[in-house]
Image 1 (cartoon, rainbow, N blue to C red):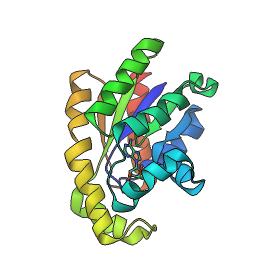
Image 2: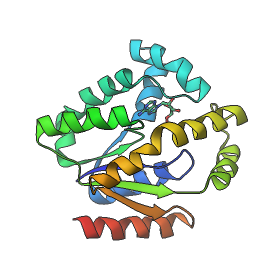
Image 3: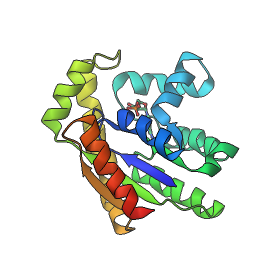
Length: 185
Ligand code: AMP
């Protein structure tokens, strides 16, 4: 299966992704992880991305589309994957659609984990990652609302979108996700 995970920072995507990839044998494609690795290794992409990441802003579409385009061509992706953190803009979604149409491997599902914004802020403020200062958290939520939320209508139109409630225990949320996957498979 080819799945896109959509949800604001703090929705629990990472935790749920770890469970999903193990149970469904999917490759985990986290653009945040890829960019952090590139930044730490000081590659050309990493140097381009660094400032945006530190400010809680999205890196330019062409940079991330290049990164993910290359990754999707690797052999392991044939077994199915979970895209976590990509696409995050309509332009990225369109680029992904074009890429997958060309390869003849369309998406099976876009899964949204929905959590209200005040709850997200509480969770993120408690997480304490280096890029999680209050202002940066606010920026990341603004970026989600303005740039990523429009994806929900985009994927809803193509009939791929399913939404699960992101409030509850890790297990409760995972069960909701499994139920949706059962309906798609
Ligand atoms: P994440 O761990 O997914 O929250 O990503 C951390 C940071 O990496 C984000 O705040 C962005 O600066 C950048 N990033 C990750 N994925 C993308 C993407 N698809 N488009 C633009 N920027 C991204």
